[in-house]
Each structure stands twice: as structure tokens, then as C-alpha cells.
Image 1 (cartoon, rainbow, N blue to C red):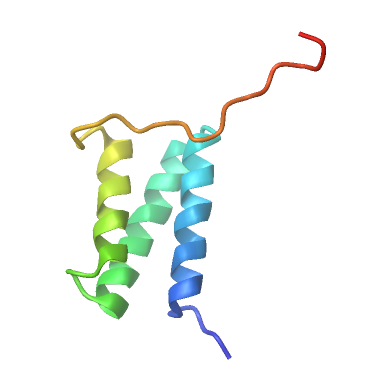
Image 2 (image 1 turned 90 degrees about the vertical axis):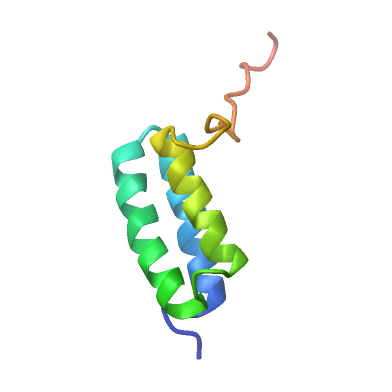
Length: 81
């Protein structure tokens, strides 16, 4: 049985944090990224690509990364326009 420390659970948490940030809940996403980062370091180690990606996403939303955070989802125009 998978637990909270399973790699799929960690990736799911990252996805949820991404969606929260992109939906406008940046403060909530930042908290989720920080908690996730602590768990990925503990479970996967500091050099794991999942840990590094979580650090990157956290830095992006803080505005510390070299490239600005991008919005993955763009609202579609209503049909007929």
C-alpha cells in the first residue's frame, strides 16, 4: 500500500501546489511547496531531481528564479468568439 512518502504521492502534492498557484492561491501554494520540499529532502535526498524541481518551483513563485513563473492553464475564450 502506498503511503504519504511514496514518490507518486509526492508528485501529486507538487501538482496540487502548482494548480493552487496558477489559480491565484499563491500563499497557499507557497506553504504547500515548503512542506513538500521538507518531505522530499527527507524521503528522496537533496540531490534528487524531484527535490531540485520542487526547489525550482518554490523559487519561481517567490520570484527568485531566473525565469518568471509561467501559467500553464490559460482561460479559453467562450465558444463563438
